[in-house]
Image (cartoon, rainbow, N blue to C red; front, side, top):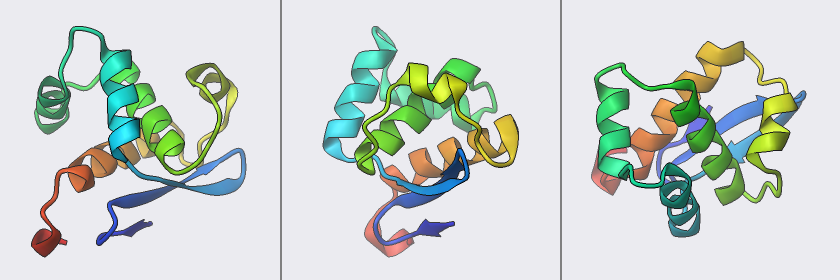
Length: 106
């Protein structure tokens, strides 16, 4: 599912395996989409199990875009993610954790 040395997480979107990664550009887009919210607050919500569907969607979109996908949140709303919402939430949480993992932790 993931490459721990590169912070990548795979997700299957409309039957196609896609790699997600939170590059600096993807993180910047994520921050913009969060508005007044912060990445620290987002990470805390995931750690505490309080993440929203909006949080999952924002992370998945940012990760896909960091992996080279050219879609948007609107495109993802119509897409089928293998495993459904719970698999999407797990992938988003793993992606966020890997983005801030030190290399020796991988």
